[in-house]
Length: 231
Image 1 (cartoon, one colour):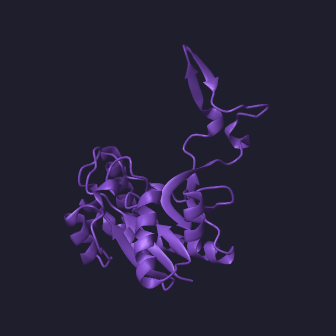
Image 2 (cartoon, helix red, strand yellow):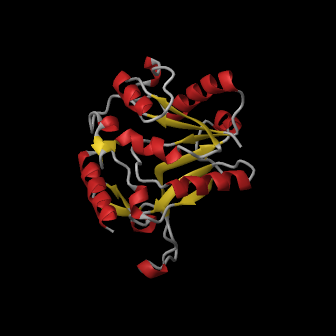
């Protein structure tokens, strides 16, 4: 099994400038995701797609491949992760031949463990290359969510006869952004990392589901990391 790991890391960030190379726990944020994929035999290469030379330099020092700077058209707020992934995949397969899977590791999810990455790769292999995405327990159950209609609140989803006691609610999970693994054929056909038939890679540890996009997220990540290091 041959997997291309891709870490997408734009230089610009409106909510948290310079986040991808900001130091977290003694190393740049992007290095956490690079290290999570290093030394895994199934991973053919770790490629960083960035439009920023500074991010590229940091990624190379961490051991990733940065063969080019991302085209300007793929460095805007409107550019999707799918477009970025297809661009990187087309480049890499053009040089090295077909890959069995593309593993997207967002740098804003630094605390996914190597064990979780290995578990996701095994799911992908065991189920004939069906796509796998990382999920964490939802912070708020969808049956407790509302939309506002004028001056009234209405349930966001039909509750039916649901028992709203927390102990009786079925488990609910949300995408956490930490792990996306898909075959190139499926990605090209569906243009989505999550479609019908996608398998969940459940991450129960709260720290693995941390997604850092704001200063508050960063502070929360530092706090959780500090707790983990004291255990």
